[in-house]
Amino acid sequence: MDPDMKHLFSAGSGYTCCKCLSPASSPCRAACGHIACMKCWKQTIPEKHACPECGQTTKFRQLKRLYFNSGPLNNAPPATNLP
Image (tube, rainbow, N blue to C red; front, side):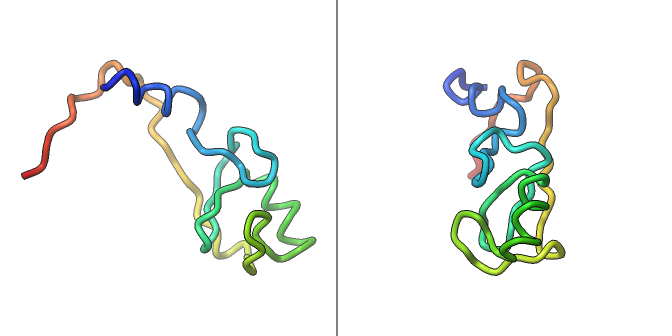
C-alpha cells in the first residue's frame, strides 16, 4: 500500500463525526451523506430531527451503519490497475 495512503486508514474508522468532530465511533451515514457517531445521532435526531451538518430531515431508519476492515494493512494485496 502506498505509504501516503496508510495514514488515512490507520486511526479508527477513518470517518470524522460531523457533530463532535472526533473520529466517529460506530459511524452511521444519513441519507444526506453526512457521517456521525451513533451516540451523536441518538442525541441529535430526537431533539432536532435533522442532520447536525446540513439540517436535512433525518430519521433513525434512514441511517446506514458504516463498517471497515481493521485488519493489518501490511498484508493487503497490491493494488491493480483496471483496464
